[in-house]
Amino acid sequence: MSEPVMAVVGFGRTGRAAVDFMLEQAGRESLLLYTDAPVARDETVAGYESRGVRFVSGADGFPRLRAAQTVVISPGVDGNTERFRDLKDRGVDVVSEIEYAFRFNRATIVGVTGTNGKSTTVSLIHHLLLHAGRTSWLAGNIGTPFISLVRKMKEGDVAVLEISSFQLEEIREFRPHVGVLLNLTPDHLDRYTGVDAYARAKQRLFLNQGPQDYAVANHDDCQVRSWLENAGMAKRVWFSTEQALPEGVCLEENEIRLGFLAETDRIPLTTFPLPGPHNLQNYLAAAATVKLLGLDGRRIAAGAADFQGLPHRMETVGVIDGITFINDSKATNVDAAEKSILSVNSPSVLILGGKDKGGDFSRLEELIRNRIRHVLLLGQAAERIRSQLHGIADRLEEVSDMVEAVERGFALLRGDNGTVLLAPGCASFDMFTSFEHRGDVFRSAVNELGARLQRMGSGSSW
Image (cartoon, rainbow, N blue to C red):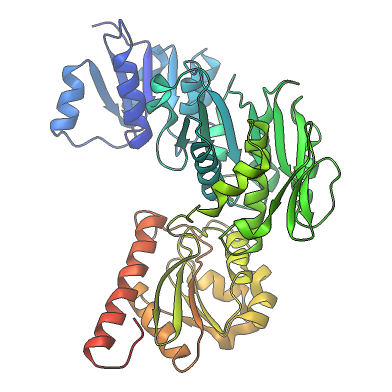
């Protein structure tokens, strides 16, 4: 059998979706699937093999990729390592899944990136479009690979994509009609050499935009303003919760003012149900985006009024004896944890920690001093966080697992109407399979605590 002209690296959700797409292409007789570790042979693997997929792995298998014309890499794969540079030097087209999908796309693309708030913002944009009767597809880093939907999309549809820095590293022609940059704060410093390298990856969202496209961006974030100065040719649409913007999106008394395009729209702030200043920024970004796609203020307000927040994002999972338990497991970096803390106004216990991503937790010290009664440290990063928060050592306590964190948080607040806030500021992969898994374990621990107190006749308000 001749060497395949297509290859996929990674056999997770994105890798499988890419393989499925390639197998549907006419004339595709075989393709290569590479993983660092061997894939366990099961019915799924056997099924792919029967359709011409060849599985290779390890250092001995990687050179087989040199024969491919195009190699599609999954988001978790770093294409900047020496082995992939070797492929590129040999003329192999190494691309991300969103780049490969773009080559077959017919829909209008909205691409949303930033350190925090991406999932809420894309979900809100998608919701507003559907509420207005538009055909919208939600995909990307939020969970559904773009490649798995691209054949279903038609001209006139909107593809709303959550896009990570990893996905943007290996684009060539990918171009959103509306690109959205929500914020830029240090993250993924376990992968990038520094904040500048991370920001340069985010900036690539605007790389191929032309004057007919739009860049929606956060005017309140000085890093965003700086990095967007020379990012592509798109028309700029700024949003701000802090300043008046005559030609952008801003707050004016109790309204959102969308002062761009032909007519100025105004939306009452009372139409948006999610708490926190960061969610208000997400709303302004989403409102600007859908106005660019043809929605007016009336339809935006009507759609926003019934938008439900996403799980694991400032999600109230229970109230026990007046103590509220909030699951913000998606707060996977220091900046997100900071925004979570600012959104809570009652006496609070904070659950912090997980897999370290190189964040600077000392930034939180003064905020914790003013707003948090006690901090429970969990997971691999616990000792590093303790060393960075040495000025408030008397408020720090390590716990062994999520169940202990929930029970200890409840005990520390019992008798007060306070909040136990899970805002870890870290990745989840030391103890959990994902941030969703971490949030589910938190919810289960809260449920079990409430049920146990009810059985004991404690008078829980559960």
